[in-house]
Length: 196
Image (cartoon, rainbow, N blue to C red):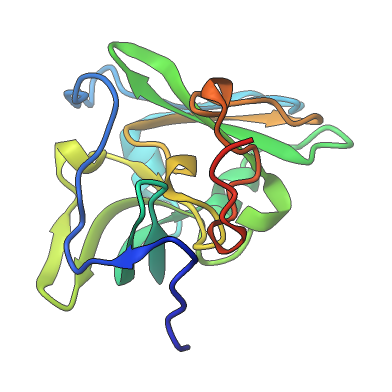
């Protein structure tokens, strides 16, 4: 597929590091991943349990609202649908909020997304990556180790959560971390939906 640069973006071959707050220090003994909200069976997974889930390898373009785009980064991770399959959703669930650590709060960062858009091979909780300049390697702590959500290319990258810690299933859409500061709820880079 031919790469498509969204309006207002420039291409980079580097993977820039941008984040708010402290870099989370992973401790497997205390880490877990929570599935909650509009579900019949809230679930909490250890890191070992997450890593036993089926894996997906996918090449995903990334578009950051700060105007850089990086094409053709290949990730390995757990597809959103594998986590959805672990819970029974209540009727009417259409949205999720994906959480990540922020300054010591495991649910301090969040990003809201429509669930239906996240059920393919391009919505991954990733732990390793490669590109044309790098062989397979773990994502670094500054990039979100041990688990980072990478959204499909139809969303700006702030919809991905570093240091991912859980998914809340919702019937109604609800602003996440950056959306509360006036960023777009839908965040489509090809429509240049940066702000509300």
